[in-house]
Image (cartoon, rainbow, N blue to C red):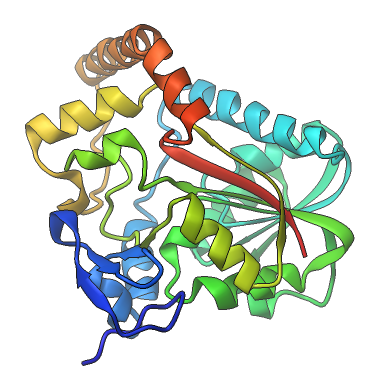
Length: 295
């Protein structure tokens, strides 16, 4: 089978680190599964089925709230603090809740029936279960895709569909793992996951947005407080990108105590590495790449 880059359509695919592939023409890094028909759907269905339970403790809720406030601040910085907002790929629904509380009228879209059901039952937020192209005919002021684009096999086509859902003057907020970050040199980088098919840097994210008809308003990187802690820990344990999603075990008192110690260590490591992480983000090597664009 000839491997064709999903971004630039060149057949110049070579080896990259940790078993990944790299297009020598545009630089996009990919998991080999991206060339397998139906891989995106099957991998994501396995990872985000009924056993997927992202919000397990107040620690996770706190971390999510911190991140959600940051995303909303980025939107306010480009003049978007109200209006209709669509989030594609909603995770545990925390960003939709935060955006609603901040004044947006929100709707979610996700492929996972389990996620849609949990968000509707827990928060009363309207959800559309299905692909983006099956949404009712409507346009939004803001479309949000946080850590979604790396899951799809046709990123340009996916972004074009997202752009068709924006009102005139609307903006797209997108966040992806930054494969150019310093932590990505370690096999335990937190974003090496079996269901991540494409890995973007600033150059390839700019290309995919431009090819899809977007003009970038703002782009920067942010280095998460847990990035180095998780990358080093998972490198010591085993490469994380070959792992699979498993049901979470029951939360006993012992497990809760272990989690508290684990999370406190993570926070302490984040504080200690703050000068390094701030420098990374400023230089463009943070572990998360964020862009805001207009179609």
